Length: 306
Image (cartoon, rainbow, N blue to C red; front, side, top):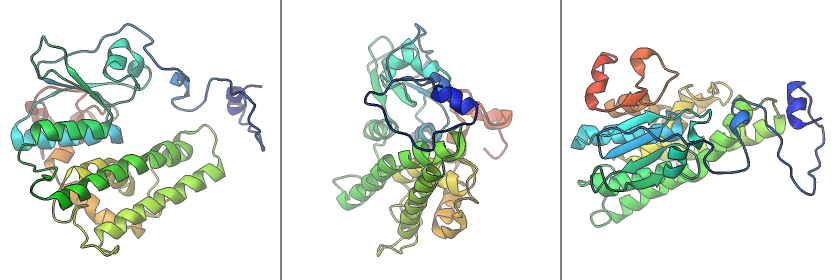
């Protein structure tokens, strides 16, 4: 009996001994039908394209929301415009066009037609890489990423927390989120292992934001300065403690993390956050989503407080 058959019948092996050579079998779960151990395009579909130099292909998951939150902050501060198109995770990420933008078939992916609409674009993939690229290209006032010349210590702190998230959040999403929320069977060891790690990470952030680690504390990850580190961290840890990610707030006893909750509430009041969270989120209500985003005026028809 295959692993997928056992999942369908709610059967699991009490003890599993890996074979000498692993052989692919269709997986169960929400996204199991699209997962394969190979890369590359599965069709010839090209990506749509808007009129701006920046073309974003994404979905409003935590990794996608990092980038749209930052792009909206750049729009509000500098007037930067971009086009955004929704990439569903039921196969669109394996199209010819998307794999050309990101050979790893993961959202988000950015194409920058820096040298004009007829020139080959610069492709940027991986959320932190996109954010750093956008900082280098457009954050000329160093509003969101401190300058290495003017404040090298603050820049180092900002980048350290940014890469803390990049290294740690996969254990929250691919670990805790998968086994607690998406896996076709619940495995106690896996849920316990990743719940423990998720709570440990929340405690790291709580100690930082509350000044309990010997530092000065918040209100932001870099003290008094709101930076890309906050934007990268919020869609994972802020939404988690607010009960908007995996419906796990009670399970993880998030009330223990007072300073993370206060930080999340502070960030939730920003206009850039609200706009960024609307982009590429097909599961949200009609007045709280933009499946495609082409100009800041697209938000005019949405919720009044925006």
